[in-house]
Structure formats: C-alpha cells, structure tokens
Image 1: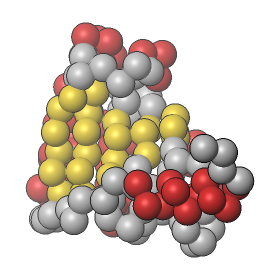
Image 2: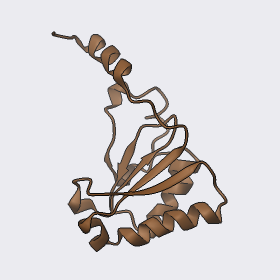
Image 3: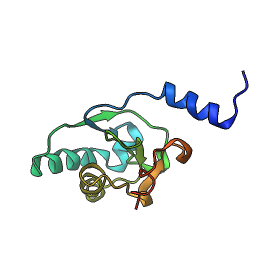
Length: 130
C-alpha cells in the first residue's frame, strides 16, 4: 500500500498511542545512567514534586534508552504534550523540567534529545517550545 503525505498523517493519527492521564517521568537507570549520576536525578525529581506538593505525577526508573552519550536521560510524558526525551539531566535540570515542562507546559529545547516529528504535532505545541 502506497500512501501520500496527507494519508500518512491521517494513518499516524489513527494509530497514535493514547497519552496517559497523568504525567510520567522515566529516568534511565541502566549502568550508563547510574554511572552518569541518574540516581541523584531520580531523587531530585521526587524531591521537587514533593516540595511543590504536586500530584498526578509518577517518577519511574527504566533501563537503557540507547542514548549513552547523553546520560542521564529522562523521558517526560505530560498529557496534551508530545513525549520528550531530555539528555544530560542533572538534579538542577530536573528541577527546571518540573517547573517549565510539567507545570508551565513549555519544552526545554536546549536539552531535547528526541521528540515527535513536527508534521504531526498539534498547532501550539511547537509554538510553546523555548
């Protein structure tokens, strides 16, 4: 089956995975991540969420994301926003991600390692990136 661009976009829209109803933060705690300090990053996310008394946010650990050169890596899934993988996430940057991405719904562009193609992102998702 051969698709043109508009058919392809429609097809991708139909098979898109439903986003979670709560925010999920996955911290890569494979051997590379641990060696790069991902344990402290994981703790920083938990501490920041607790200190700001935020709810509806789950912080989980995951294995290797395949981006060893950018460890610690973190995937952030916020309802209504594209899933984003950030790299070189220190505890200080973890706090910045909570404030900007999770609370204010603004992408932290200079740390993004991977994100969906802009042709399937809804209008406004790209506009809100900084």
